[in-house]
Image (cartoon, rainbow, N blue to C red):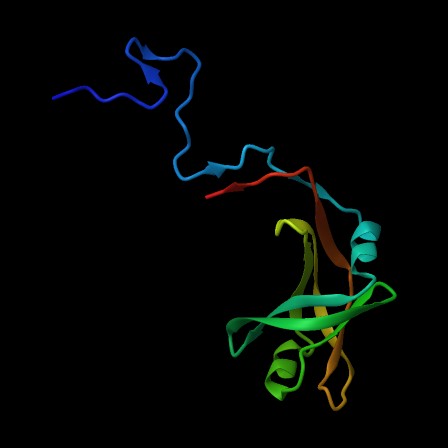
Length: 151
């Protein structure tokens, strides 16, 4: 039976100091972006214009992710889950996680901000309830550099 060699081995054996390629990873040839942690002020600045995000809650003990439109009022995130009492009941006075992010033109994440807390009822109206989430627990990141590793 013929002997088998690793792809980085020569007839004389493996190259000293060489490592085997990592199975399942594809590199694009550009450096992997790194994520830099944001300050509280940096997180709030990214959320300030408002936009679209997601709220994670539980509904009848099942996790749900709800797309929401949001604004920032002071240092709180204000959002509405849209019409429907079921979604409002899942959120009202419950601990929820909110997340908003932005993708660059290349489809890679530019930044992400996460807020966790109790969603308090703000108002009710024809478009459903609105909730106010304190930004007491807020974390975020933004990408530095370009490139990707996928697997």
